[in-house]
Amino acid sequence: MKPDITRRIFKIKEKNDFLDITLEIFKYQADNNPVYNLYLKKLGSRYRVPENHTEIPFLPAGFFRNHMILTGDKPAEIIFESSGTTGTSGSCHYVADLTLYEKSFFSAFTLFYGDPADYIIYALLPSYTERENSSLVYMVRHLIKATGSTLSGFYRDDYKKLQENISRGRDKGKKMLMIGVSYALLDFAEACNPDLSGIIVMETGGMKGRREEIIRPELHSMLKEKFNLETIHSEYGMTELLSQAYSLGEGIFRCPPWMKILIRDPQDPLSIITEAGRSGGINIIDLANINSCSFIATDDLGKVHEDGSFEVLGRLDNSDIRGCNLLIE
Image (cartoon, rainbow, N blue to C red; front, top):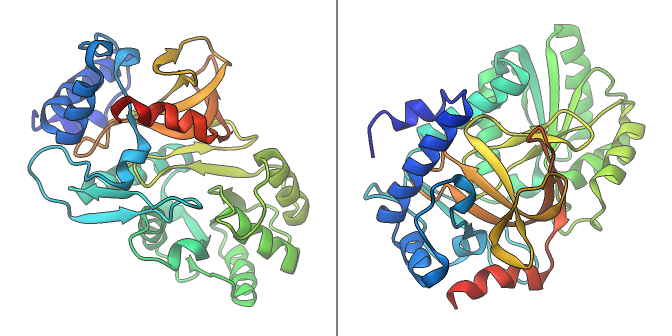
């Protein structure tokens, strides 16, 4: 791998730059990632060397549950872990270079929201802070530190202190952002019914078994009413990735330039749907994930719009997920 590739990833501006780097990283990972290399070989006649990003085979995210996905010889600095869904084990992401992750999430946050030093960040992520090695907690902890504010922090269920520091934050004249997992935001909203007008509220999705799952529009409607807000922001990321997409409202997500969403046919996991607006399985190209795998087939259902923005519609059912994994059984 050329030593300047990481610098080029975060300087992508043109479509051709993205395509060139994508094919370069694919070749590198196909040759130097043992699990991905075996996966490509197991595809047999269905695999051919891609000439375009839509022809690249995407590794099912489920592989992160029982394989060490690493490209190259550099050992992992940290292993990020997910909690897993009911009846499944969690994923493990072996990260060989934490500076790449930090570069990715700081660059993406700055792109969508500006300098974190201009903010006070309040975090409600109890299900994540309860376990070690959460990539989301790692990111938020570093963003909180970058704010330089003693009011920024993780609040769990200390709603009294949280409300006090929100009032103090208003007096500081800084921007304020509250990021939380869906059920924790609802718990805070129902317990306190606080007026958060003027504050950015960002949900990270998921009830984590604490509440019944609901669709995003219903969640946003409840939070807007309880918090006295006109819109709710969202973050879309995964343990298996090093990049995040953000929605500034209405559940419409956009990616940073080094990340791209493709939609695969639920009936044929190797076929990409090129027509905008059709729903299917979400595939993600994350070029920052150069030391792992940059081409992940997720278990999420979504659709991409003409301008490249996308929506997450829910989870694929078990038969759709199994359709990906049967390829190497």
